[in-house]
Amino acid sequence: MNTEQLLSAITTQARNEPDSGIVKAAMYGMAIPGVIPMWSGEGNVPTPEIFTRPAIDSLLAGETFYTWQRGIPELREALARYHARNFDRAFSHENFFVTSGGMQAIQSIVQMVAGEGDEIIIPTPAWPNYGGALRILGSRPVEVPMDFRNGRWMLDLDRLFDAITPRTRAISLNSPSNPVGWTATRDELIAVRDECRKRGIWILGDEVYSRFFYGERGETRAPSFLDICDDEEQLLLANTFSKNWAMTGWRVGWLQAPRALGPAIERIIQVNSSGTPAFLQKGCVAALDHGDEFLAQQVAKARSNRDLVVAKLREMPGIRFEVPQGAFYLFFAIDGMKDSAATTMRIIDEAKVGFAPGSTFGPGGEGHLRMCYLRDPAKLTEALDRFGNWLKIKRPS
Image (cartoon, rainbow, N blue to C red; front, side):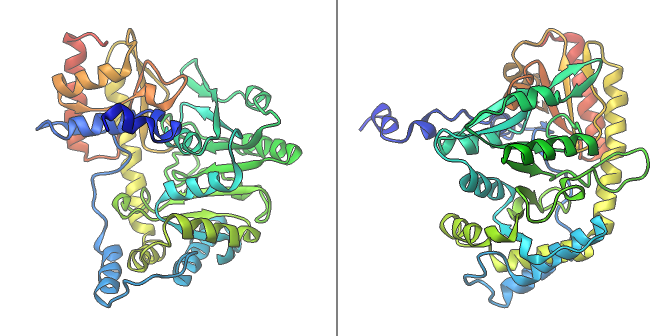
């Protein structure tokens, strides 16, 4: 069979799902010597030994068999302790389910609440994997563009709620946001909660970057649905060990859900992955119980790097952006740029700097580029100098 025949034999969803612009930029740039990478959402620091040592010890001790589908009890209990510390109230381990990465948590949510033809509302620009997870299953992401005006990204709640139809199963909200750094206020979260309660639809929360929050009053986390919602209502939260504790390559995350959904979640995990390796989970216990100092250092570094990037970009003509309130990305527009994907490749080739194209983040993203600034400050400075010099002599596509 030729290529066309083979492709026609797979599902329409698998055949037509667009490539991730982030992955395309990374795969292209990784093959070019000397490129400074800022395309992916991760820092430059490897996982600390205090987290890796328990995983190594567990592996060497032979803990390589099938394990609890919901996650080992030690990790679920550690998740409850971690949340109790950060939210000043009690949590039950019965509301936590360990997954093979934050992406599997999102996939599990979608598999539970959305079927063929169902809709989930997603404010954009947004991380492209949300829409991809829905389309692959035959569901439909309903993208509601945020507004960028007066130097700020804003979510129009009336527009968001007007997008609800009889097919709507959930509103998905990522705060702090990847890619724009927008962070919902407590009042905005309450408005979403109340609308979802009234309509009988789910809240799908992504608070992966909640600890990377740059409040003005010394807050250690962003406003959260956990501040205003009951544990046993229609709220599903996806999270990951990747960002807080420098564990992107470990592929371990968690899903927080009403305990009544436990058997359904367990079945979905079983058919998707048959559980997460126990030795990896032992390292995650250590991250939760002993990682507060490391996390504080990561957040301080991100804040300092954000300020460095903001100062540098403000010196460059034709650049527009909002100073992000959270996460560790700078999403910036370049005057005259019409094709962010082509411009991304040109900057890789001509400046040896790797960004991600704004077009991959959905409506409202074109005309922008995204950089991850949780990097070594010296390399970050070098990358911005290269980019500034490129802007002076080149024109964006």
